[in-house]
Image (cartoon, rainbow, N blue to C red; front, side, top):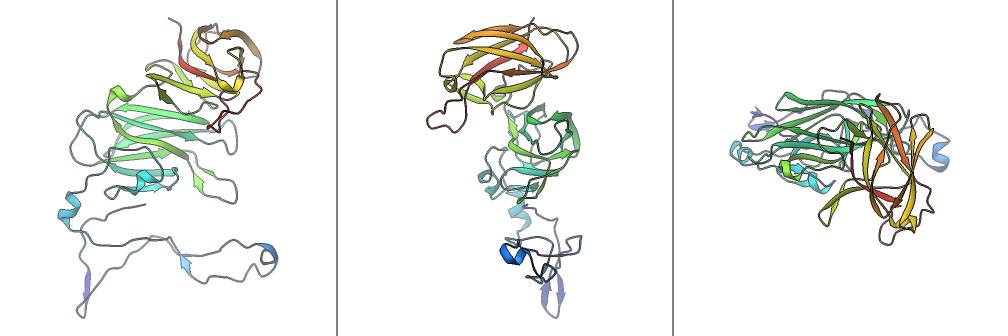
Length: 324
């Protein structure tokens, strides 16, 4: 975290200024990990007698004029580098992008940046049925609320321009603990958060479509004027209302061939459609029901490695939308 307090006046005692900070909770014993024989004996003996509430890197005064001159970035797109901006205030975000159930940033906004975007990942650590309600607020006013499922998520919402710093808050209803030896409590992992012009927002699912991407999709990419998402072996999506779906899809290098059979299964794992795909092709998926449902795209693959890319790239999707 990097936070700045409201204006304060130190307490002067015998000509010396003092400032006390109350962390709001009692300190706890610092317990470094024990290994080898130390993990078997003497666990009740403290190796470090300090009582700790947190770690601090810097504590300094700034003037009101310096505070007014802060120019925070409009967005954070890299972790940890983005958090190192000297004018950025934030809390509840780990340096590698993991966030707690409540996080806040103070960002700048330009007149043409009327879209607030939050892209990230809701991790599968426990139950596959886990959901989380995400609430996005700006300057204390809620601007977006939705329920996300496991996998990557994208939130784009309109926020009118206002001068000055904007307080952007995220709240998640679900909190999980990262596996050992990490153990941090996390609600998700951010890939991007901030303001950007509407023209820069794009996704393989067009705006307004009743389709939500689930798990299995690699992050959105743009190359050669194209926008797409790569897939390893399978990827999921949910249709809010039933009907046929069109897919602009292309074989990837990990298949080792230009043609393949795309399999579509329902949420019970039953194969409902098998479609041959040659090169890049637009195909129609005639979903079997008019009701909402979850579906999985899959392909049989030798999973050949790709030079200079650690991922398995079996196929990519340029567009996923309901058939008009």
